Image (cartoon, rainbow, N blue to C red):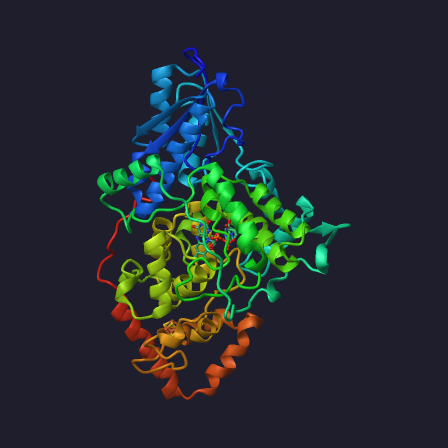
Length: 530
Ligand SMILES: Cc1cc2nc3c(=O)[nH]c(=O)nc-3n(C[C@H](O)[C@H](O)[C@H](O)COP(=O)(O)OP(=O)(O)OC[C@H]3O[C@@H](n4cnc5c(N)ncnc54)[C@H](O)[C@@H]3O)c2cc1C
Ligand code: SF4
Protein backbone atom coordinates (compact mmCIF):
# COMPACT_ATOMS: atom_id res chain seq x y z
CA UNK A 1 0.00 0.00 0.00
CA UNK A 2 1.46 3.44 -0.89
CA UNK A 3 2.46 5.67 1.99
CA UNK A 4 0.26 8.67 1.32
CA UNK A 5 1.30 12.03 2.66
CA UNK A 6 -1.09 13.98 4.89
CA UNK A 7 -3.19 16.17 2.64
CA UNK A 8 -3.48 13.59 -0.17
CA UNK A 9 -6.78 14.03 -2.07
CA UNK A 10 -9.80 11.94 -1.13
CA UNK A 11 -11.91 10.14 -3.72
CA UNK A 12 -15.43 9.44 -2.44
CA UNK A 13 -17.03 6.38 -4.04
CA UNK A 14 -20.75 6.11 -3.39
CA UNK A 15 -22.18 2.64 -2.73
CA UNK A 16 -23.74 2.89 -6.20
CA UNK A 17 -20.38 3.47 -7.98
CA UNK A 18 -18.42 0.33 -7.11
CA UNK A 19 -16.23 0.13 -10.18
CA UNK A 20 -12.62 1.07 -10.81
CA UNK A 21 -13.26 2.16 -14.39
CA UNK A 22 -15.32 5.14 -13.22
CA UNK A 23 -13.41 8.39 -13.14
CA UNK A 24 -13.62 8.82 -9.40
CA UNK A 25 -11.12 6.08 -8.58
CA UNK A 26 -7.66 7.40 -9.51
CA UNK A 27 -5.66 5.27 -11.95
CA UNK A 28 -2.60 5.48 -9.72
CA UNK A 29 -3.05 4.29 -6.12
CA UNK A 30 -0.49 6.90 -5.09
CA UNK A 31 -2.84 9.74 -6.07
CA UNK A 32 -5.04 9.63 -2.98
CA UNK A 33 -7.32 7.74 -0.63
CA UNK A 34 -10.54 6.07 -1.77
CA UNK A 35 -13.27 6.81 0.76
CA UNK A 36 -16.32 4.56 1.16
CA UNK A 37 -19.05 5.59 3.58
CA UNK A 38 -21.85 3.70 5.24
CA UNK A 39 -24.49 6.35 5.91
CA UNK A 40 -26.41 5.56 9.10
CA UNK A 41 -29.23 7.87 8.00
CA UNK A 42 -29.64 6.05 4.69
CA UNK A 43 -29.54 2.70 6.43
CA UNK A 44 -32.41 3.77 8.67
CA UNK A 45 -34.39 5.79 6.11
CA UNK A 46 -36.66 2.99 4.93
CA UNK A 47 -37.53 -0.53 6.09
CA UNK A 48 -35.06 -1.97 3.57
CA UNK A 49 -35.23 -5.54 2.41
CA UNK A 50 -32.67 -7.44 4.48
CA UNK A 51 -31.11 -8.83 1.27
CA UNK A 52 -30.70 -5.35 -0.12
CA UNK A 53 -28.73 -4.25 2.92
CA UNK A 54 -26.55 -7.35 2.59
CA UNK A 55 -26.07 -6.65 -1.12
CA UNK A 56 -24.97 -3.04 -0.71
CA UNK A 57 -22.86 -3.49 2.42
CA UNK A 58 -21.17 -6.65 1.18
CA UNK A 59 -20.48 -5.17 -2.27
CA UNK A 60 -18.85 -2.16 -0.58
CA UNK A 61 -16.63 -4.38 1.58
CA UNK A 62 -15.64 -6.47 -1.44
CA UNK A 63 -14.83 -3.35 -3.41
CA UNK A 64 -12.67 -2.03 -0.56
CA UNK A 65 -10.83 -5.37 -0.41
CA UNK A 66 -10.34 -5.38 -4.20
CA UNK A 67 -8.86 -1.88 -4.10
CA UNK A 68 -6.61 -2.71 -1.17
CA UNK A 69 -5.33 -5.77 -3.00
CA UNK A 70 -4.53 -3.50 -5.94
CA UNK A 71 -2.46 -1.25 -3.66
CA UNK A 72 -4.94 1.51 -2.86
CA UNK A 73 -5.29 3.26 0.45
CA UNK A 74 -8.97 2.78 1.36
CA UNK A 75 -10.98 4.30 4.21
CA UNK A 76 -14.32 2.69 5.08
CA UNK A 77 -16.18 5.02 7.41
CA UNK A 78 -19.48 4.69 9.24
CA UNK A 79 -21.01 8.15 9.69
CA UNK A 80 -24.40 9.84 10.22
CA UNK A 81 -24.50 10.90 6.51
CA UNK A 82 -22.26 10.66 3.44
CA UNK A 83 -21.12 14.27 3.80
CA UNK A 84 -20.43 13.79 7.52
CA UNK A 85 -18.24 10.84 6.63
CA UNK A 86 -16.28 12.84 4.06
CA UNK A 87 -15.92 15.70 6.53
CA UNK A 88 -14.58 13.33 9.19
CA UNK A 89 -12.05 11.91 6.73
CA UNK A 90 -10.91 15.39 5.64
CA UNK A 91 -10.53 16.36 9.31
CA UNK A 92 -8.52 13.26 10.18
CA UNK A 93 -6.28 13.17 7.10
CA UNK A 94 -6.17 16.84 6.12
CA UNK A 95 -7.13 16.01 2.49
CA UNK A 96 -6.53 19.05 0.31
CA UNK A 97 -9.43 18.26 -2.01
CA UNK A 98 -12.22 15.75 -2.46
CA UNK A 99 -13.48 14.19 -5.69
CA UNK A 100 -16.80 12.42 -6.18
CA UNK A 101 -19.12 11.38 -8.97
CA UNK A 102 -22.41 13.29 -8.86
CA UNK A 103 -24.62 11.36 -6.40
CA UNK A 104 -27.47 9.43 -7.92
CA UNK A 105 -30.21 10.68 -5.57
CA UNK A 106 -31.72 14.15 -5.87
CA UNK A 107 -31.62 15.22 -2.20
CA UNK A 108 -28.07 13.92 -1.75
CA UNK A 109 -26.95 15.46 -5.03
CA UNK A 110 -28.33 18.85 -3.90
CA UNK A 111 -26.40 18.61 -0.64
CA UNK A 112 -23.17 17.72 -2.47
CA UNK A 113 -23.70 20.50 -5.03
CA UNK A 114 -24.19 22.97 -2.19
CA UNK A 115 -21.02 21.72 -0.46
CA UNK A 116 -19.16 22.19 -3.76
CA UNK A 117 -20.57 25.71 -4.14
CA UNK A 118 -20.05 27.07 -0.64
CA UNK A 119 -17.01 24.98 0.30
CA UNK A 120 -18.64 23.64 3.46
CA UNK A 121 -16.12 20.77 3.67
CA UNK A 122 -13.41 23.37 4.20
CA UNK A 123 -11.57 22.08 1.10
CA UNK A 124 -12.64 22.02 -2.57
CA UNK A 125 -15.17 19.34 -3.51
CA UNK A 126 -14.97 18.48 -7.21
CA UNK A 127 -18.04 16.71 -8.60
CA UNK A 128 -17.66 14.66 -11.77
CA UNK A 129 -20.40 13.64 -14.20
CA UNK A 130 -21.87 10.16 -13.80
CA UNK A 131 -22.63 9.93 -17.53
CA UNK A 132 -20.18 9.11 -20.34
CA UNK A 133 -18.46 6.25 -22.05
CA UNK A 134 -17.37 3.86 -19.29
CA UNK A 135 -19.73 5.40 -16.76
CA UNK A 136 -22.84 4.34 -14.86
CA UNK A 137 -24.88 6.00 -17.63
CA UNK A 138 -24.14 6.57 -21.27
CA UNK A 139 -25.32 10.16 -21.52
CA UNK A 140 -23.55 13.01 -19.71
CA UNK A 141 -26.10 14.89 -17.59
CA UNK A 142 -25.78 18.10 -19.61
CA UNK A 143 -26.43 16.27 -22.87
CA UNK A 144 -29.48 14.52 -21.41
CA UNK A 145 -30.83 17.88 -20.18
CA UNK A 146 -30.14 19.49 -23.57
CA UNK A 147 -32.12 16.73 -25.32
CA UNK A 148 -35.01 17.14 -22.87
CA UNK A 149 -35.15 20.88 -23.26
CA UNK A 150 -34.94 20.79 -27.04
CA UNK A 151 -38.06 18.62 -27.31
CA UNK A 152 -41.25 20.19 -28.60
CA UNK A 153 -43.96 19.43 -26.01
CA UNK A 154 -45.94 16.36 -26.97
CA UNK A 155 -49.71 16.18 -26.36
CA UNK A 156 -50.21 17.80 -22.89
CA UNK A 157 -49.66 16.75 -20.16
CA UNK A 158 -47.00 14.55 -21.81
CA UNK A 159 -43.78 16.43 -22.50
CA UNK A 160 -41.34 13.71 -23.53
CA UNK A 161 -41.66 10.55 -25.58
CA UNK A 162 -39.57 7.50 -24.88
CA UNK A 163 -39.63 6.37 -28.52
CA UNK A 164 -38.07 9.67 -29.62
CA UNK A 165 -35.42 9.42 -26.94
CA UNK A 166 -34.67 5.84 -27.97
CA UNK A 167 -34.32 6.89 -31.63
CA UNK A 168 -31.92 9.61 -30.52
CA UNK A 169 -29.84 7.14 -28.50
CA UNK A 170 -29.71 4.60 -31.32
CA UNK A 171 -28.49 7.29 -33.71
CA UNK A 172 -26.03 8.61 -31.14
CA UNK A 173 -24.45 5.24 -30.35
CA UNK A 174 -24.82 3.70 -33.81
CA UNK A 175 -25.88 0.44 -32.10
CA UNK A 176 -28.02 -1.77 -34.36
CA UNK A 177 -27.77 0.89 -37.07
CA UNK A 178 -26.55 0.53 -40.64
CA UNK A 179 -26.06 3.50 -42.95
CA UNK A 180 -28.04 5.67 -40.55
CA UNK A 181 -31.03 3.25 -40.61
CA UNK A 182 -32.11 0.71 -37.97
CA UNK A 183 -30.97 -2.86 -38.67
CA UNK A 184 -34.00 -4.93 -39.66
CA UNK A 185 -35.85 -1.91 -41.01
CA UNK A 186 -37.52 -0.75 -37.78
CA UNK A 187 -36.43 0.67 -34.46
CA UNK A 188 -38.57 -1.55 -32.26
CA UNK A 189 -39.49 -5.23 -32.45
CA UNK A 190 -41.73 -4.96 -29.41
CA UNK A 191 -44.73 -6.36 -31.28
CA UNK A 192 -42.80 -9.66 -31.84
CA UNK A 193 -42.01 -9.90 -28.15
CA UNK A 194 -45.28 -10.80 -26.45
CA UNK A 195 -45.30 -14.57 -26.62
CA UNK A 196 -46.27 -17.07 -23.94
CA UNK A 197 -43.66 -19.83 -23.40
CA UNK A 198 -45.99 -22.82 -23.73
CA UNK A 199 -44.14 -25.88 -22.45
CA UNK A 200 -40.76 -24.12 -22.39
CA UNK A 201 -38.89 -23.70 -19.15
CA UNK A 202 -36.44 -20.88 -18.40
CA UNK A 203 -32.75 -21.61 -17.84
CA UNK A 204 -31.26 -22.27 -14.44
CA UNK A 205 -30.33 -19.07 -12.63
CA UNK A 206 -26.71 -18.53 -11.71
CA UNK A 207 -26.52 -18.20 -7.93
CA UNK A 208 -23.60 -16.75 -5.99
CA UNK A 209 -22.94 -18.52 -2.70
CA UNK A 210 -22.00 -16.16 0.14
CA UNK A 211 -18.26 -15.99 0.93
CA UNK A 212 -16.86 -15.01 4.33
CA UNK A 213 -17.38 -11.28 3.80
CA UNK A 214 -21.00 -11.81 2.75
CA UNK A 215 -21.66 -14.26 5.58
CA UNK A 216 -20.35 -11.73 8.08
CA UNK A 217 -22.53 -9.05 6.51
CA UNK A 218 -25.57 -11.29 6.68
CA UNK A 219 -24.98 -11.84 10.39
CA UNK A 220 -24.51 -8.11 10.92
CA UNK A 221 -27.71 -7.16 9.06
CA UNK A 222 -29.73 -9.77 10.97
CA UNK A 223 -28.30 -8.45 14.24
CA UNK A 224 -28.01 -4.68 13.78
CA UNK A 225 -30.90 -3.69 11.50
CA UNK A 226 -34.17 -4.44 13.29
CA UNK A 227 -36.38 -2.45 10.87
CA UNK A 228 -36.01 -4.68 7.82
CA UNK A 229 -38.38 -6.57 5.53
CA UNK A 230 -37.70 -10.11 4.29
CA UNK A 231 -34.74 -12.14 5.46
CA UNK A 232 -31.00 -12.44 4.84
CA UNK A 233 -31.39 -16.21 4.41
CA UNK A 234 -30.73 -17.51 0.93
CA UNK A 235 -28.81 -14.41 -0.17
CA UNK A 236 -27.25 -15.20 -3.57
CA UNK A 237 -26.79 -11.98 -5.58
CA UNK A 238 -23.43 -11.08 -7.16
CA UNK A 239 -21.43 -8.66 -5.01
CA UNK A 240 -18.15 -8.33 -6.94
CA UNK A 241 -17.27 -7.21 -10.40
CA UNK A 242 -15.99 -10.69 -11.28
CA UNK A 243 -19.28 -12.25 -10.24
CA UNK A 244 -21.22 -9.55 -12.08
CA UNK A 245 -19.24 -10.37 -15.26
CA UNK A 246 -20.12 -14.05 -14.76
CA UNK A 247 -23.79 -13.09 -14.39
CA UNK A 248 -23.57 -11.16 -17.66
CA UNK A 249 -21.88 -14.07 -19.46
CA UNK A 250 -24.48 -16.46 -18.09
CA UNK A 251 -27.33 -14.28 -19.34
CA UNK A 252 -25.79 -14.08 -22.80
CA UNK A 253 -25.19 -17.84 -23.02
CA UNK A 254 -28.31 -19.18 -21.31
CA UNK A 255 -31.16 -16.69 -21.61
CA UNK A 256 -30.46 -13.96 -24.15
CA UNK A 257 -31.76 -15.82 -27.20
CA UNK A 258 -35.25 -16.04 -25.67
CA UNK A 259 -35.18 -12.75 -23.77
CA UNK A 260 -37.32 -10.99 -26.36
CA UNK A 261 -40.26 -13.27 -27.09
CA UNK A 262 -41.04 -14.08 -23.45
CA UNK A 263 -40.22 -10.82 -21.71
CA UNK A 264 -43.88 -10.05 -20.99
CA UNK A 265 -44.80 -13.54 -19.76
CA UNK A 266 -45.29 -14.76 -16.18
CA UNK A 267 -45.10 -18.36 -14.97
CA UNK A 268 -46.00 -19.61 -11.52
CA UNK A 269 -42.83 -20.77 -9.67
CA UNK A 270 -40.55 -19.22 -12.31
CA UNK A 271 -39.43 -15.92 -10.82
CA UNK A 272 -36.56 -15.24 -13.21
CA UNK A 273 -37.90 -16.28 -16.63
CA UNK A 274 -35.44 -15.25 -19.37
CA UNK A 275 -34.69 -11.89 -17.75
CA UNK A 276 -31.13 -10.63 -17.45
CA UNK A 277 -31.10 -10.01 -13.66
CA UNK A 278 -28.52 -7.35 -14.42
CA UNK A 279 -30.19 -4.25 -12.96
CA UNK A 280 -28.74 -5.30 -9.59
CA UNK A 281 -25.05 -5.21 -10.61
CA UNK A 282 -25.59 -2.33 -13.03
CA UNK A 283 -27.19 -0.10 -10.41
CA UNK A 284 -24.38 -0.87 -7.95
CA UNK A 285 -21.89 0.18 -10.62
CA UNK A 286 -20.39 -3.32 -10.93
CA UNK A 287 -21.24 -3.35 -14.64
CA UNK A 288 -21.50 -0.44 -17.06
CA UNK A 289 -24.42 -0.16 -19.46
CA UNK A 290 -21.95 -0.02 -22.34
CA UNK A 291 -20.40 -3.40 -21.60
CA UNK A 292 -23.82 -4.96 -21.03
CA UNK A 293 -25.13 -3.75 -24.39
CA UNK A 294 -21.90 -4.65 -26.16
CA UNK A 295 -22.18 -8.21 -24.83
CA UNK A 296 -25.68 -8.48 -26.34
CA UNK A 297 -24.51 -7.01 -29.65
CA UNK A 298 -21.62 -9.45 -29.72
CA UNK A 299 -24.02 -12.37 -29.12
CA UNK A 300 -26.25 -11.11 -31.92
CA UNK A 301 -23.23 -10.72 -34.20
CA UNK A 302 -22.29 -14.39 -33.82
CA UNK A 303 -25.87 -15.54 -34.28
CA UNK A 304 -26.58 -16.40 -30.63
CA UNK A 305 -29.22 -13.70 -30.03
CA UNK A 306 -31.91 -13.08 -32.66
CA UNK A 307 -32.48 -9.49 -33.71
CA UNK A 308 -35.84 -9.16 -31.89
CA UNK A 309 -34.27 -10.29 -28.62
CA UNK A 310 -31.17 -8.18 -29.07
CA UNK A 311 -33.14 -5.07 -30.02
CA UNK A 312 -35.53 -5.65 -27.10
CA UNK A 313 -32.63 -5.84 -24.69
CA UNK A 314 -30.81 -2.83 -26.17
CA UNK A 315 -34.08 -0.85 -25.90
CA UNK A 316 -34.41 -1.67 -22.20
CA UNK A 317 -30.91 -0.52 -21.35
CA UNK A 318 -30.38 2.24 -23.90
CA UNK A 319 -33.97 3.39 -24.21
CA UNK A 320 -35.62 2.84 -20.86
CA UNK A 321 -32.82 2.95 -18.29
CA UNK A 322 -31.29 6.13 -19.69
CA UNK A 323 -34.73 7.68 -20.25
CA UNK A 324 -35.79 7.07 -16.65
CA UNK A 325 -32.64 8.69 -15.38
CA UNK A 326 -33.21 11.67 -17.70
CA UNK A 327 -36.81 12.29 -16.62
CA UNK A 328 -35.83 11.85 -12.96
CA UNK A 329 -33.39 14.75 -13.13
CA UNK A 330 -35.71 16.87 -15.27
CA UNK A 331 -38.72 16.38 -13.02
CA UNK A 332 -37.26 16.33 -9.52
CA UNK A 333 -38.27 17.44 -6.99
CA UNK A 334 -41.78 17.86 -8.52
CA UNK A 335 -41.93 14.18 -9.46
CA UNK A 336 -41.88 13.17 -5.80
CA UNK A 337 -45.15 15.01 -5.06
CA UNK A 338 -46.87 14.44 -8.41
CA UNK A 339 -50.33 12.91 -8.09
CA UNK A 340 -52.12 13.48 -11.40
CA UNK A 341 -55.01 11.15 -10.57
CA UNK A 342 -55.44 12.37 -6.98
CA UNK A 343 -54.91 8.87 -5.56
CA UNK A 344 -54.91 8.86 -1.75
CA UNK A 345 -55.35 5.36 -0.36
CA UNK A 346 -52.90 3.68 2.00
CA UNK A 347 -51.13 0.64 0.62
CA UNK A 348 -52.97 -2.64 1.30
CA UNK A 349 -51.20 -4.74 3.92
CA UNK A 350 -50.83 -7.67 1.52
CA UNK A 351 -47.99 -5.89 -0.30
CA UNK A 352 -45.98 -6.32 2.90
CA UNK A 353 -47.58 -9.64 3.87
CA UNK A 354 -48.23 -11.45 0.57
CA UNK A 355 -49.47 -14.61 2.26
CA UNK A 356 -52.57 -12.74 3.36
CA UNK A 357 -54.05 -12.38 -0.14
CA UNK A 358 -55.69 -15.08 -2.22
CA UNK A 359 -55.06 -13.23 -5.48
CA UNK A 360 -52.63 -15.73 -6.90
CA UNK A 361 -50.76 -13.41 -9.25
CA UNK A 362 -50.29 -10.79 -6.51
CA UNK A 363 -49.26 -13.35 -3.94
CA UNK A 364 -46.70 -14.82 -6.35
CA UNK A 365 -45.21 -11.45 -7.33
CA UNK A 366 -45.17 -9.82 -3.89
CA UNK A 367 -44.15 -13.10 -2.25
CA UNK A 368 -41.21 -13.35 -4.61
CA UNK A 369 -40.14 -9.80 -3.73
CA UNK A 370 -40.30 -10.63 -0.04
CA UNK A 371 -38.29 -13.80 -0.61
CA UNK A 372 -35.65 -12.56 -3.08
CA UNK A 373 -35.90 -8.76 -3.44
CA UNK A 374 -36.74 -9.19 -7.13
CA UNK A 375 -39.73 -9.44 -9.44
CA UNK A 376 -39.43 -9.00 -13.19
CA UNK A 377 -40.70 -6.07 -15.18
CA UNK A 378 -44.18 -7.35 -16.06
CA UNK A 379 -44.84 -8.42 -12.50
CA UNK A 380 -43.81 -4.95 -11.36
CA UNK A 381 -45.82 -3.09 -13.97
CA UNK A 382 -48.86 -5.22 -14.71
CA UNK A 383 -49.47 -6.95 -11.37
CA UNK A 384 -48.06 -4.88 -8.49
CA UNK A 385 -48.14 -1.48 -10.18
CA UNK A 386 -51.41 -2.07 -12.03
CA UNK A 387 -53.17 -3.11 -8.83
CA UNK A 388 -51.87 0.00 -7.05
CA UNK A 389 -53.16 2.14 -9.91
CA UNK A 390 -56.63 0.55 -10.04
CA UNK A 391 -56.97 0.55 -6.26
CA UNK A 392 -55.91 4.20 -5.97
CA UNK A 393 -52.77 3.85 -3.82
CA UNK A 394 -51.22 7.19 -2.89
CA UNK A 395 -48.11 7.36 -5.10
CA UNK A 396 -45.56 7.64 -2.29
CA UNK A 397 -47.15 4.71 -0.45
CA UNK A 398 -46.43 2.38 -3.37
CA UNK A 399 -43.18 4.09 -4.23
CA UNK A 400 -41.73 3.54 -0.77
CA UNK A 401 -42.66 -0.12 -0.93
CA UNK A 402 -40.84 -0.55 -4.24
CA UNK A 403 -37.82 1.44 -3.09
CA UNK A 404 -37.46 -0.46 0.18
CA UNK A 405 -38.28 -3.90 -1.14
CA UNK A 406 -36.35 -4.37 -4.39
CA UNK A 407 -32.64 -5.12 -4.41
CA UNK A 408 -32.15 -3.01 -7.56
CA UNK A 409 -34.18 0.00 -6.35
CA UNK A 410 -32.71 3.48 -6.11
CA UNK A 411 -34.80 6.61 -6.22
CA UNK A 412 -33.58 7.70 -9.69
CA UNK A 413 -35.06 4.59 -11.29
CA UNK A 414 -37.78 3.45 -8.88
CA UNK A 415 -39.57 6.80 -8.68
CA UNK A 416 -40.06 7.41 -12.43
CA UNK A 417 -41.09 3.80 -12.90
CA UNK A 418 -43.64 3.89 -10.08
CA UNK A 419 -44.89 7.47 -10.41
CA UNK A 420 -44.72 7.56 -14.20
CA UNK A 421 -45.09 4.08 -15.67
CA UNK A 422 -47.15 2.32 -13.03
CA UNK A 423 -49.34 4.98 -11.40
CA UNK A 424 -49.50 7.76 -14.00
CA UNK A 425 -48.99 10.14 -11.08
CA UNK A 426 -46.48 12.07 -13.18
CA UNK A 427 -47.91 12.14 -16.71
CA UNK A 428 -45.10 14.11 -18.34
CA UNK A 429 -43.20 11.20 -19.85
CA UNK A 430 -45.60 8.31 -20.47
CA UNK A 431 -48.45 7.99 -22.94
CA UNK A 432 -51.21 6.53 -20.81
CA UNK A 433 -51.91 4.65 -17.58
CA UNK A 434 -50.92 0.95 -17.86
CA UNK A 435 -54.29 -0.29 -16.58
CA UNK A 436 -55.33 -3.87 -17.26
CA UNK A 437 -58.05 -6.28 -16.20
CA UNK A 438 -57.73 -10.03 -15.56
CA UNK A 439 -57.99 -10.69 -19.31
CA UNK A 440 -54.44 -9.42 -19.79
CA UNK A 441 -53.09 -11.30 -16.76
CA UNK A 442 -54.78 -14.51 -17.85
CA UNK A 443 -53.31 -14.20 -21.35
CA UNK A 444 -49.76 -13.49 -20.17
CA UNK A 445 -49.53 -15.82 -17.15
CA UNK A 446 -50.49 -19.23 -15.84
CA UNK A 447 -51.68 -17.90 -12.47
CA UNK A 448 -55.43 -17.72 -13.09
CA UNK A 449 -56.11 -21.44 -13.59
CA UNK A 450 -55.59 -22.29 -9.91
CA UNK A 451 -56.79 -18.98 -8.44
CA UNK A 452 -59.81 -18.85 -6.15
CA UNK A 453 -61.04 -15.91 -8.21
CA UNK A 454 -62.76 -16.14 -11.58
CA UNK A 455 -60.86 -14.11 -14.18
CA UNK A 456 -63.92 -13.86 -16.39
CA UNK A 457 -66.31 -12.45 -13.76
CA UNK A 458 -66.68 -8.77 -12.92
CA UNK A 459 -69.10 -8.91 -9.99
CA UNK A 460 -69.78 -11.28 -7.11
CA UNK A 461 -67.54 -12.38 -4.27
CA UNK A 462 -65.45 -14.73 -6.40
CA UNK A 463 -64.99 -12.33 -9.32
CA UNK A 464 -61.38 -11.40 -9.96
CA UNK A 465 -60.76 -8.09 -8.13
CA UNK A 466 -58.79 -6.74 -11.08
CA UNK A 467 -61.97 -6.67 -13.19
CA UNK A 468 -64.25 -4.49 -11.07
CA UNK A 469 -61.33 -2.24 -10.15
CA UNK A 470 -60.32 -1.91 -13.80
CA UNK A 471 -63.77 -0.91 -15.09
CA UNK A 472 -64.40 1.34 -12.14
CA UNK A 473 -61.04 3.04 -12.76
CA UNK A 474 -61.77 3.50 -16.45
CA UNK A 475 -65.22 4.95 -15.77
CA UNK A 476 -63.95 7.31 -13.08
CA UNK A 477 -61.23 8.65 -15.35
CA UNK A 478 -63.20 8.52 -18.57
CA UNK A 479 -62.92 12.22 -19.40
CA UNK A 480 -59.15 11.96 -19.36
CA UNK A 481 -58.82 8.54 -20.93
CA UNK A 482 -61.16 8.55 -23.89
CA UNK A 483 -59.17 11.26 -25.60
CA UNK A 484 -56.59 8.51 -26.09
CA UNK A 485 -57.46 6.55 -29.23
CA UNK A 486 -55.85 3.42 -27.76
CA UNK A 487 -58.39 3.19 -24.95
CA UNK A 488 -61.47 4.86 -26.49
CA UNK A 489 -62.70 1.58 -27.95
CA UNK A 490 -63.07 0.11 -24.45
CA UNK A 491 -65.75 2.58 -23.52
CA UNK A 492 -68.15 1.28 -26.17
CA UNK A 493 -68.17 -1.98 -24.19
CA UNK A 494 -68.89 -0.11 -20.94
CA UNK A 495 -71.69 1.82 -22.64
CA UNK A 496 -73.39 -1.40 -23.77
CA UNK A 497 -73.88 -2.61 -20.17
CA UNK A 498 -77.02 -1.58 -18.29
CA UNK A 499 -76.97 0.79 -15.30
CA UNK A 500 -77.49 -2.02 -12.83
CA UNK A 501 -74.37 -3.88 -14.01
CA UNK A 502 -72.31 -0.71 -13.99
CA UNK A 503 -73.49 0.15 -10.48
CA UNK A 504 -72.64 -3.35 -9.28
CA UNK A 505 -69.12 -2.94 -10.67
CA UNK A 506 -68.65 0.37 -8.83
CA UNK A 507 -70.01 -1.17 -5.62
CA UNK A 508 -67.70 -4.20 -5.83
CA UNK A 509 -64.69 -1.93 -6.49
CA UNK A 510 -65.55 0.31 -3.55
CA UNK A 511 -66.05 -2.67 -1.25
CA UNK A 512 -62.65 -4.09 -2.24
CA UNK A 513 -60.93 -0.78 -1.66
CA UNK A 514 -62.55 -0.33 1.75
CA UNK A 515 -61.71 -3.87 2.80
CA UNK A 516 -58.08 -3.54 1.70
CA UNK A 517 -57.22 -0.10 3.06
CA UNK A 518 -55.44 -0.38 6.40
CA UNK A 519 -56.33 2.11 9.13
CA UNK A 520 -52.73 3.19 9.41
CA UNK A 521 -49.51 2.74 7.44
CA UNK A 522 -47.32 0.06 8.90
CA UNK A 523 -43.98 1.69 8.14
CA UNK A 524 -42.55 5.19 8.33
CA UNK A 525 -40.06 6.67 5.88
CA UNK A 526 -37.45 9.39 5.90
CA UNK A 527 -36.66 9.17 2.25
CA UNK A 528 -34.45 12.26 1.84
CA UNK A 529 -32.00 11.14 4.51
CA UNK A 530 -28.44 10.16 3.72
C1 LIG B 1 -43.18 -0.22 -10.97
C2 LIG B 1 -41.79 -0.47 -11.46
C3 LIG B 1 -40.71 -0.29 -10.62
C4 LIG B 1 -39.41 -0.48 -11.08
N1 LIG B 1 -38.37 -0.27 -10.23
C5 LIG B 1 -37.09 -0.42 -10.68
C6 LIG B 1 -35.99 -0.22 -9.82
O1 LIG B 1 -36.15 0.14 -8.66
N2 LIG B 1 -34.74 -0.42 -10.31
C7 LIG B 1 -34.53 -0.80 -11.59
O2 LIG B 1 -33.37 -0.95 -12.00
N3 LIG B 1 -35.55 -0.99 -12.44
C8 LIG B 1 -36.82 -0.82 -12.02
N4 LIG B 1 -37.87 -1.05 -12.87
C9 LIG B 1 -37.58 -1.36 -14.28
C10 LIG B 1 -37.46 -2.86 -14.60
O3 LIG B 1 -38.60 -3.54 -14.16
C11 LIG B 1 -36.21 -3.47 -14.01
O4 LIG B 1 -35.07 -2.74 -14.43
C12 LIG B 1 -36.03 -4.90 -14.43
O5 LIG B 1 -37.15 -5.66 -14.09
C13 LIG B 1 -34.77 -5.46 -13.78
O6 LIG B 1 -34.65 -6.82 -13.99
P1 LIG B 1 -33.67 -7.43 -15.09
O7 LIG B 1 -32.31 -6.93 -14.90
O8 LIG B 1 -33.89 -8.89 -15.07
O9 LIG B 1 -34.25 -6.74 -16.37
P2 LIG B 1 -34.51 -7.19 -17.87
O10 LIG B 1 -35.97 -7.34 -18.05
O11 LIG B 1 -33.68 -8.34 -18.24
O12 LIG B 1 -34.06 -5.86 -18.66
C14 LIG B 1 -32.70 -5.57 -18.93
C15 LIG B 1 -32.29 -4.27 -18.31
O13 LIG B 1 -33.01 -3.18 -18.86
C16 LIG B 1 -33.11 -2.11 -17.92
N5 LIG B 1 -34.51 -1.71 -17.82
C17 LIG B 1 -35.56 -2.34 -18.37
N6 LIG B 1 -36.70 -1.64 -18.16
C18 LIG B 1 -36.35 -0.56 -17.44
C19 LIG B 1 -37.07 0.53 -16.91
N7 LIG B 1 -38.39 0.65 -17.07
N8 LIG B 1 -36.38 1.43 -16.18
C20 LIG B 1 -35.05 1.33 -16.00
N9 LIG B 1 -34.32 0.32 -16.51
C21 LIG B 1 -34.96 -0.61 -17.22
C22 LIG B 1 -32.57 -2.63 -16.60
O14 LIG B 1 -31.29 -2.10 -16.37
C23 LIG B 1 -32.51 -4.14 -16.82
O15 LIG B 1 -31.46 -4.74 -16.10
C24 LIG B 1 -39.18 -0.87 -12.43
C25 LIG B 1 -40.28 -1.06 -13.27
C26 LIG B 1 -41.56 -0.85 -12.80
C27 LIG B 1 -42.70 -1.03 -13.73
S1 SF4 C 1 -57.98 -14.53 -11.34
FE1 SF4 C 1 -57.41 -12.43 -10.98
S2 SF4 C 1 -56.39 -12.43 -8.99
FE2 SF4 C 1 -56.50 -14.55 -9.69
S3 SF4 C 1 -54.53 -14.90 -10.70
FE3 SF4 C 1 -56.00 -14.26 -12.29
S4 SF4 C 1 -55.78 -12.07 -12.44
FE4 SF4 C 1 -54.79 -12.66 -10.54
